[in-house]
Structures are given as structure tokens and as C-alpha cells.
Length: 93
Image (tube, rainbow, N blue to C red; front, side, top):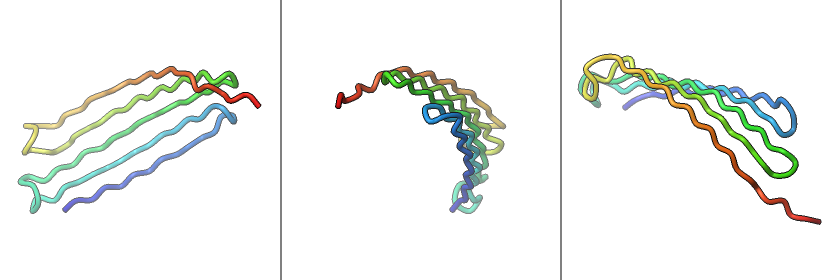
């Protein structure tokens, strides 16, 4: 018994570059888990792909747990950063 709301916004900087922002808020009922729970996630992601097939992705995510007494004694926050680089082979025509 809970509820989650998620929003995201995509912006195409160019045909090979995107920026995405997302937000999620979740709650769990006190009737389902003792003390209930509430947390929020925020993330920002950027992707770039070159014509040669090389791509770069970066993501920054922040999570804030304002209340989840069954797991944590008080509010918790964490931050994660990810960078990925790769290559997607292109087929020749």
C-alpha cells in the first residue's frame, strides 16, 4: 500500500545529444509497513553519440529518504554519479 509519482523532462539538444531530468516521490502507508515511509529521487542524465558510434553517458542522482523508520533511524541522503563510454559499431551500406 503505497503511492509513487514520477515526472521526467527530455530535451533534445541535437539529434545526437539529449538531456533528461527526472523526479520521483514515493510513500508507503503506515498500515503496510510500521512507521510508513517517504523518499524522493532526483536525477539528471546527459547522453552524446558521435556519428562514428562512440557514445558518452553521464548521470547524477540524488536520493533523499525523509522517513523510513523500519530501515533508518532518521533522514538519509545519498548521491550517485555514473559515467559510461562505449562504442556501437555502424553497419556499412
